[in-house]
Length: 394
Ligand SMILES: [Fe+2]
Image 1: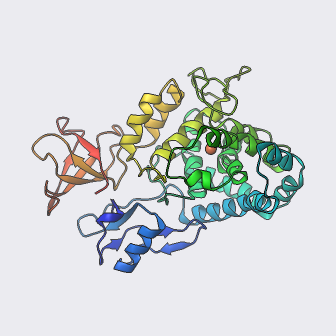
Image 2: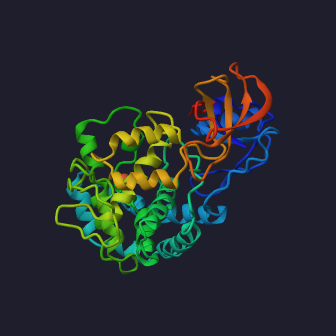
Image 3: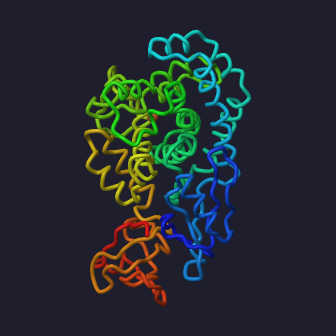
């Protein structure tokens, strides 16, 4: 199977991976033959890429790092928990930031969250996620297929998977990693207290609107702190997940020192806690490889390119180094275009990832420069250093 953009789809093509709705139910199952109506529906809903399966690539099995059951459960529980603050806000019609903060601090919403079944469920599913991710040498690089709006729930899970894998490389113990997972799953809960439309505007936000968005980590922290089940660490991760190394992040402008975020590292006053530095990097990556209302998704290699420029100033450079060892720049099933050599402009699919050289996978060339199907053949890029590729969604 391989990943293609929605515009490439034609009736009769076979879906390689199921499409999961925002509420955690299956919209279209894998193996289904697409029809004109299905394609139009996917387009209307805002999906921008899907996996398809054909004879040339049916042996390329793109496996998720999480079991599908775990992922669906996690989406449902997050959505259910996040609906508590969302409903409260709708009821109260609070407008100004001061009003929202007062409402959060009144304790009513906190009590509802603390006593909810969905919070217990999220705590339980965080154990399952950690168990499934720990000790993976690297991740598949597969992120959930998201729509260009309302991506919060799937995003929360993808950020959790990536953060847990990175923290594992820095040798955090399982108890700390569990706290991290909880913080990740809940990191954007503060968004639910802010007018939803602000996140879906297909335009640049005004300064005032952005000032409101900048408060979501603090609102999340205020919502979650002092809830016994959640513990102390997770609410602080939520509070700090948009802070940057140079102090230009928000909401407090904490700084980072670009040192390894080791479990033994102590956090000085005014500095970001190490686990939040990990979540920040994971958050940036997942936002880049997901479609947004104002742009389409970047491919993983494009996201890496952008993140390299953010190294040291916004992203902790040591976290970034480890991240590049955890996710392949060209994940299995990624479509690429050859950019140099005899096969320039041919289209290929990543057929296996070389564990020792994540940026030089083996590719299967399936189309010529005119995008016409050819008899497939493979090139191992680790042995053909003169051939370069770039990620592309055909
Ligand atoms: Fe956020």
